[in-house]
View (cartoon, rainbow, N blue to C red):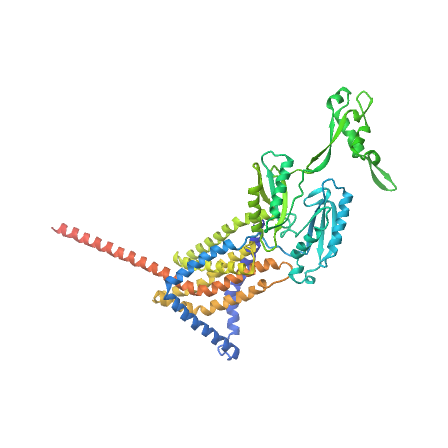
Length: 595
């Protein structure tokens, strides 16, 4: 799906960049180090100050770590609180599919009252253009009468508004979202039609317009009028909600039509086939292709049709004649009658059921996830029995991506765990390393919440990336502590020395990555919303993970390795006792044999 394509691009980019980086670190970097690093280094005032600053940081860190290790139980309690806060942040940060980007154009859907002619619709589009050009952000507008993404018909239309370049629209008050909200208020001054401007879909091809597409399905065999009433009930209730904005549906069962009834019994008596009656009405009231003819090296198509004055009203049908099979001409007024009815102009189906689509968008300051929950709540209260709802477009992709995100996150977690198990040939070391991940997720969600961003696909990609980044820092401590343990140091001394020695590499690599991701956090211009979402996630996660995991990982190491040592001692003690019992039993058997 669409979510998979986004993850695939991210995965390929990271995989190839890390592969090239690993090759560089193992081959080119040692060679460059041998060439550039000399034995006699000139003292530099700036570098001396940096070294002194880092040494002071390391001394402060050692004191803090020693204090934390002496209070393991309170530290673990704080860690449990962070996990609880992470769960709350998952609930508090609104969900979304992808952030809305400023793509530089707006799609406006126009719907006039049922029965409006095409010429009247064109006049309405012209009125709307006057409103558009009164806004300095709009460059030009293209109007299409008789067609829109919400349906086709003489009373429908669509307008595409091109905005001025992004660099000429500085400030949030000139963004595409602000322009859409401003236009909605201005277009309400046109009473002849409902005109709803929308942002384009965040991902082209997923939906026709921005916002959400909500499908009401008739699964109980209701009439078209009942489907229309249910649709208007949902729109009416949703319009009062502070979460929803611009609810709109092109479906209506009030389109005036002319019903032509043919007296089949009389037609049979007069020996006239129904096909001849229908063909006669089609030719005169509609049109029919005859042939082509050439004139002055041009080809013209010939259509036959009654003159306009003879097809202006439904009563005109009766003045035409149809030929019977015996050759006599029979006036259609003797065979047909007309009546005016009101029904739907087009009947759409969604998953085999008759449906009506409602378009809308979340109110300013609310996410698409909140809008989805609000629409579902309204539909459950308002829709009658036998009617249900489904999602389409970007809303459907968002709901499907939500379930996929949890699966992808857990799959990444399991893969890293299995790789670490294979590397360390132990289950304890990977557990210590991966316990650093929840702290990074807490930092990521805290940053998203602080900036008012949503938990969208780019945020989820960033959190998957944080699994590896948080694990990397923990590996530096755990790996070196294991080496010191092999030299005979105690658990506490080993992890204290490992943390102190690895402090500078962890700080420098993390700081380099954080500064590298900073341009994404503060990015502006077209496409900045996606960059800011991913950048903020990784930025916040790395800062919190780097600071807190320097304290938490040593505590995890001491706690889990101490438990491991206790199990080892118990197992060793059990083996010794078992061997002693076997030796005693062997001695008794030997004595019995001698006797």
